[in-house]
Image (cartoon, rainbow, N blue to C red):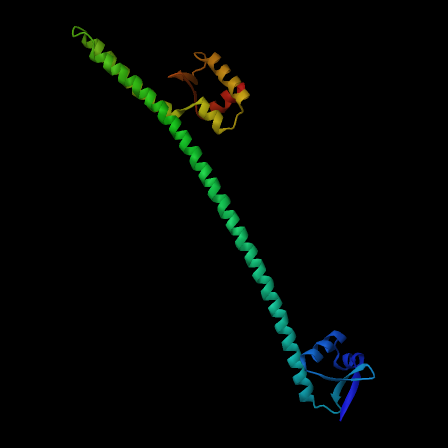
Length: 219
């Protein structure tokens, strides 16, 4: 013979909420009957402890599985978001690398042009030397050789210890107005400051701490 309990009574009996009783009825783990428009939960009058334990375990397992499924779904959503963020970061990194590569190439192109100019001057002097009258003295030849050595030293010094002002201003993001003021001040200091010189129409300044002092003075 079955015992009839209202939903509230059944909830108290099992020590759960009414929503949990509704879920069990829907899953079929509990039986019910409707009388005079009222739903009753049917229970065995003297259910064994084993039966009660089995029902409780089954209910717990179902609820646990539902919880795990919900967590798995949340983890999938988080993983999808991380993948999207990862793709965005990779694209941004690639963009930065491309921009850096282009800036470096621009700097080296500029230096190559300066080197070509200096080598062209060296070649011009060499051609001029080939047309020197045969009666020129050995001292003149020695002087020319010394000039060639000085020119080579100048080339090495230019690319190791000096930097062209336009290149420096571009790398350090000086605006056009500030750049013009600085170059004008540097031109005024030519011959007065040994850390400033002019070659092939370009202004060069000494690298290192002195460079910062020079620019800081005119900036």
